[in-house]
Amino acid sequence: MRRLAAAVAVALILLTVGSRADADQTAAGFSTSYQRIPGADGISLGAVVLTPTGQGDGPFPLVVMPSSWGVPNVEYVGQGTKLATAGFQVIAYSSRGFWDSGGGIDIAGPPTVADVTKVIDWADQHTPADTSRVAAVGISYGAGTSLLASAQDPRIKAVGAMSGWADLIASLDPNDTVALQSVAGLLALGNITGRPGPEMASLQTKFVTGDFDGAIAEAGQLAPQRSAATMVDQINANHPAVFLANAFEDSIFPPSQYTAFFTRLTGPKRLLLAHGDHATPEVTGAIGLPNETWDELTAWLRHYLTGADNGADTAAPVQLKSQRGVWRGYPSWAAVGQSRTSYLTKPAGLSRTGALQPQSSTGWTSGIAAGVPTIADSGVALVSGALQGLLSIPTGVATPLVDRSFAGVWSGPVRSRPVQLS
Image (tube, rainbow, N blue to C red):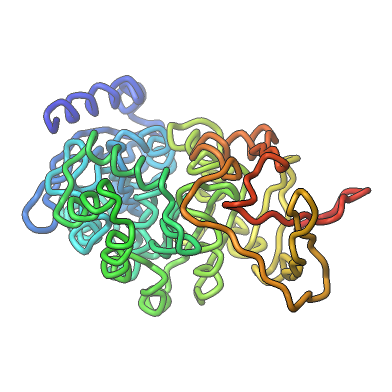
């Protein structure tokens, strides 16, 4: 697979960037090469290297881009060409264990994080990069890796983490409930596009045999060193400018764990939330198409790596996009709005449906059997969230048909006029 992936990478690079560097040696452009970069523990990483041309001899600020789970290094070539043309040295590489990179998939373990540092070291010796001005940028798996690397390498002055995680357990086991579709999909994709390492193989065995408690217990032991939320003190000490972006309906990494992490950051920070499912708000930008998230991130990198006076440091730290396409800015996550508590009443009547009310209701109990699915679910991972976020098609549930033997149902009053949620 590694040789095939390398051949595919080179072919896609040629198709994507053409001969831009040769067209006009005096205009701002870039040169492109495929490189094998030594990673941690002696493995090698397949990388696409984009070097600015027609923009002087450098040194240029460096942007390191670890790939998403199951995606090769060409994932970022479209956006990488824009960054290189704008004067950034870019290295996009396939994450450890996937495609043309060596090693096994360790679920963002220490070797995967150390690979970022090894790529920076290689760039210092083989490219006109200024390794005192480095950004780590990625989507999904690459986002989590970038955040973790910023805790370990003080040369990283900016982070762009889109559709990633800060708390691995809160993402894949929200409310102590395994995200079955997400976990199954990630495991399948990892086996198709890569080589599971010992950690992934062990978790996978427990998961496919139905030992969810064992899998979560083991994941709980692995999660702290794979979660930026547990390393927030180190990140704050290194003081990188952290740019976070996610989708409201993300079915793999719910945004709630990002907002909690964002609140704890003390350095320059920005949080963008838009509607859609996992990676849908920024995936078009990765391949080079117009994209609001990437535009904001590029301005962020320009300011914090080159000192550009573009207002990136004065814009509202929290930006939320409505389904009508309107962005609203807030000075903090707390300013978005306060939560409101509703209290449950005892399910009653033939429908066994309870009510939601502002006052507490005590002195009653109600029970259901557990472990049996009903039609009340969140839909299909990646699909339902995208339909709801991008086309305003919500996940439909016929409430009267929900089996009350295995589910509790409570219903609030019908609203006669629109209500602003945030």
